Length: 388
Image (cartoon, rainbow, N blue to C red; front, side, top):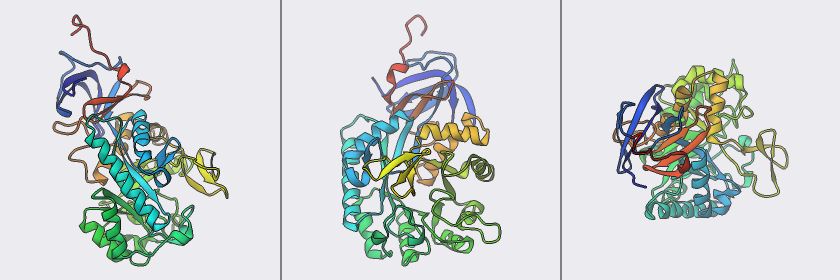
């Protein structure tokens, strides 16, 4: 189909917390304008449907049975199709701590595969928006499933090699702010426009404020792989909650963080909360899904089985907020975190037509990337001439 049409009428969650009713004019893959409900439509969602921006996951390790570390470039197409089924139009490919050369090779292969999909033209699913390195500059005491022998001190040489391996696609790096060499490396990444995230860290409040001063702008998987938010000696999380320049990433599965704490975190942060999945396909005999999370053989939580659309529904339930409010933490908030909010995250004239279509029961019906349906196109239909 064409990437120029009028979609609607439908309820439209704009991505800024508000809800309107109308139609969306799409021209050459971008949002041209929002129209009133009445008038001609080329493409109609079912009755009662909602249209929202496409979801964005900034922390995922793969999809289905494919891991970016292990399957590298082969995982990109699988992840793109899988994320489209969740209503997501973008994601970062996460490279976890591994032998250094293996990490660099995986990053290069993922970047190349993502570029090849772009060069082919019409999208097949969600876009890979870049690379997220989770490690290897971590605190061994909070390494969790990241193997200790692969954790390294940060150096400028390694930082530059990371940038070069990603071929311009390095977007996010999770580091422990207190790890050796991170001060200099964080400043380097900040100057390069690469987002630094605090994670797998033993840092407390004071170190957190210092990290923010160095350019850290977000924290990875709140409450997990860090000290508890103690009332006498608060962890690094307190600094990122308090500082208005930052965001906090949350795995909203109800297991990594209990529902009451999700509610408390949302009440404090509102649109500074970023929903992520930390999705870890249970690939290999050493991992299993148990109790809603993915665990290693010794029982350590390795990641989540969460999907992005479920994260939105969970936030709605745990924080008792409507869809148009919850969707912000999966659309505009991650777009701002990645400095992509001029292109993505809200339904506004001039932005990419990256959209998700939901039923009145908040199930994903269709996903549109660059104006083209990449999932659930059968749920969108061309009105008859009589109804048009």
